[in-house]
Image 1 (cartoon, rainbow, N blue to C red):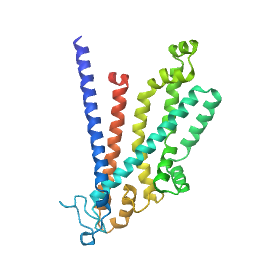
Image 2 (cartoon, helix red, strand yellow):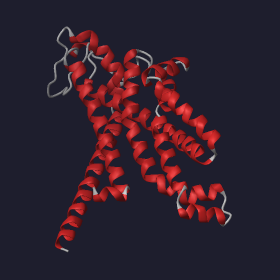
Image 3 (cartoon, helix red, strand yellow):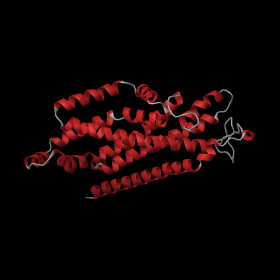
Length: 282
């Protein structure tokens, strides 16, 4: 009994720490979004009297070759990347949910077709397909968003399909069919609540991939336009100045991008731990 009480206490403490971590990460990301919106005008202000200033108290991230505040540009770029990541991930997760449900419930023909499509998408490198879609749609905000959304659903779709196939074999699903319940009623009442933890965790874990790929495509010149202070554009422009010793132009935006990706991963793993009852016994 004492061992059980100790184990229960450890699980409770672990879940409490997980909740605190998730809340802190969400607050930090919200602060970045708000700061990016508030500093939008400052991010594009130029002042050649202060160009190429090294990091100091007034300019914590320094300034660039046009005298723009790199801290303001970094926060604005991060907020843009986060917004694109949230929108693209939400679309991609919905596509994964719809196709995964169709593959698991509409018979062998639909399952074979969707499985083939998943294998095809996973067989093509993300960045190549993303560049092609973005370029075909004229690049810019919507080109990148649609490109990210259409290239990041297969992994989550495969997971949801597998979960739904297992749930379909459950006894209560068979009883619901014998009682004459419609497929939509069964999906809404019995299937979707069961796969909600996997769906939410997968949705959140799509964010870091979406943000990194958006930055990569913009860095390569197939994403957002140069006048927008996106992280990928900031890093791309800074490459021309690294050889002259302007190290801060790439270091701080790059570290900030890594921090945002880590925060999203912490949130995703934390949500999966809190929503999945099995994680309490790991």
